[in-house]
Length: 460
Length: 91
Image (cartoon, rainbow over all chains, first blue to last red; front, side, top):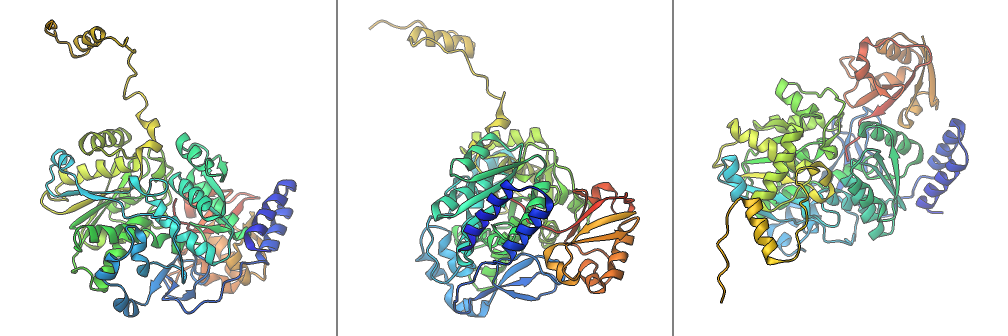
């Protein structure tokens, strides 16, 4: 019996029996039947503890048993140097898979979707509003298949989920991850179990269920969902993309950085503004830039990283502003629910990334987030979700504070699509009374709404 | 105060396989000391070289993060359930 089938067996038994004794018994059953790893040649990557450096090979695990610190994928860069070149990347597909050599992918992995390689373009009209001259948007609001940068991380996580023999994949999510796991699970033939806070935006709930995922709503904050999932993963050993597959999953975020560099003509920007929830993305964009420098694909440059949060959930920006190396957890209260993580696991590393080259972190109020969504839409024709509003709103502050200077090449990371969070714009645009389909009525409408007198129509 | 501590799977090899441990402790410091005494091999996994709680270890009391309850200043009540959980990434 393969692992995923056992995972479902465990759940179905759980539904018929209640009580802690039953649950712990199930945990033992599942634990004793851990997935088998396929035989394969020694890969060019492996898991290492970020703190003590202990090597853990390749396996579904995210924590070092020795010091409880997170694991990260490390690579043999000497070996990669001869294999990863600009020319070889250029021959690759127009998707994140053109950077496969710098991702932890199983031998002979065949991607099923052209995820990533989203547009990077100048934003002159927004730049004018922000007092900038050299501003770019990296637009993951159009990432495939579910319109957020989470598609990148899930694509890598599921590649490893298949390699480790899981048939059921799972996650805790603030919404975008839920959508992406559900969609890519359907595409790749996994069953999916998704855990979300109960107050998630309706579009993100429907946008998960439509793929046939089992959606479990938890009456609590994301941080409580996350804690519960770490306990479930501990007992059941499912393929949780952001728990036991997390080190591989997080590497997918690097492709945002690779693409920025390549799309700028193989050079690094001066500044990057990145929204922060758990704090992983900003650290992985830096890792991507560092890898490109190590491999000689771009000239070295001290890129400044700017983190963006909602004021109602700002543990990382608060720590940066206070000069602290660690975050204090917060209870989130913001419309930016995709960023509502009060206890960011990568907060420590996000702070280090920001401080490395003189970056900064800012936060923006809920009304500021909504105004920024509207500003981006009206200046550049991009409808972003609340996280994008956070990025734009914080960028505006950073320009005003002269932390980012107008001539510097600056990239704003827009990570999600506004069609998922239309609820925050409720009441912003009144629904007008319909008018009859007659030209005279339209003339009256113009006079009424624009407060002008139209000239009489001239008869031919 | 008698409290129950749930031990996560990776650390059970250090608690003779016990998933739940009962301790008498008034606060977090006392709890860690009690665990140190009962399971000496566990100590380096919970505290760093300076004796501070490991950065990526989260402690929950009755499912609430202990930092919201006052952290070290929180006084355990009889029957409190303590969870030791590693930090987990966002979503």
